[in-house]
Image 1 (cartoon, helix red, strand yellow):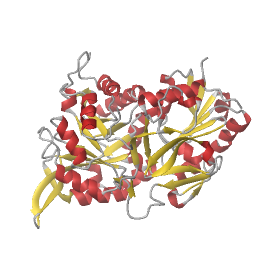
Image 2: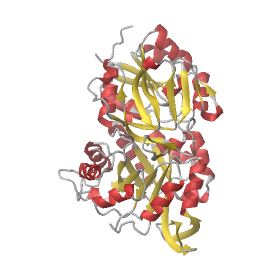
Image 3: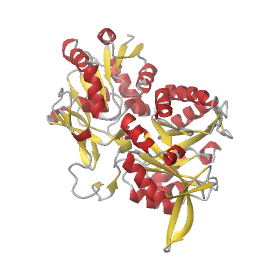
Image 4: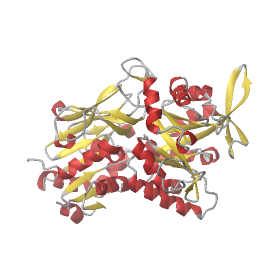
Length: 257
Length: 221
């Protein structure tokens, strides 16, 4: 027995409310991130990721307050991402109670931010989020590129090479989202998950496309991921975290039960 | 009895999680502080730590937290719980940042997971490659009976996040063992000091139980 593979529910939060809400039995406020995080904590989630999609600057204060409230009540690791642009933003979130902060677009504009943040706060709390999309094959081999703006804008950066560079600069973990699969419920893009997981020594979280429990299993067994992140299958009550863990355990994956 | 706990703050990151978790399990007052008076007035002391060891050691010495800790341990003889980099700082020396001298309260070394590895990767017993940092929930084998393990099943999982691990010279001090490519000290116990590599404040039920046990611990010394 050894290190367990992790299941991470993800909350998309806009101005302090979980987007589209959740559908759990007995929940009082389907849009309250604090109550939802507490429920996932009780269900045995291994971590919680909080993705802030608030567009307005004023909304950021709401986010900080929400993170503070979650951190006071939830005693599992909490990752906060979305709109993180500077060492100061990272400090604000860590001080509010986040254990890890995920950096996405800002790392593309300024890769050195990852190094500075890692040296200042430690690699253990710096997650680099990569939004990857399959592009035309090169020499018959599949290739994935980093896209920004919700998958609309190509950057020309090779996703696997980028993951290696981010690890070298001091990232402690990679959160990999397939923009081809996000929201489709067709399962993870296993090719890019495997390619990045093999290329870096740091843990990789697979994200984007989970529609059923087999997808979670495949992310680990075929994709080589260290953790799997999902939103809608948990939010809408299709599956609970304990169900997902039991299913993964049945398929020979080590989980925390 | 309501307990007053001082969480020693040497400015190296978020200690609210530790403070919230202690309050959650019943600590009467929790002070996140490097003020000598507050630390002296506390019934129990938590010595946490995150980040890189060189910066941590520099701040620990600059703020004289080393003296405060030594005084809590050997003069006031209070129960002390060291967490993660706080545990590593207790050892003689760490390999991190090119080699850093630590407090030498517990003779022993802090090594990188890959430092004794032959070949490019850390491997488990079956030859599977292991990622570094060691991040996530791993089992802790209780190698000593101890009041801080009360109510926690042997081999319970705790949350770890670290690239360096502790190896105490005196093997009889090991209270918990971790296997991750190598055998590492997940917990050390000596008199009124208990040190853990994992984060009890992030380890859900088992972690909260350990903190609860810490609040009730009366080391006979």
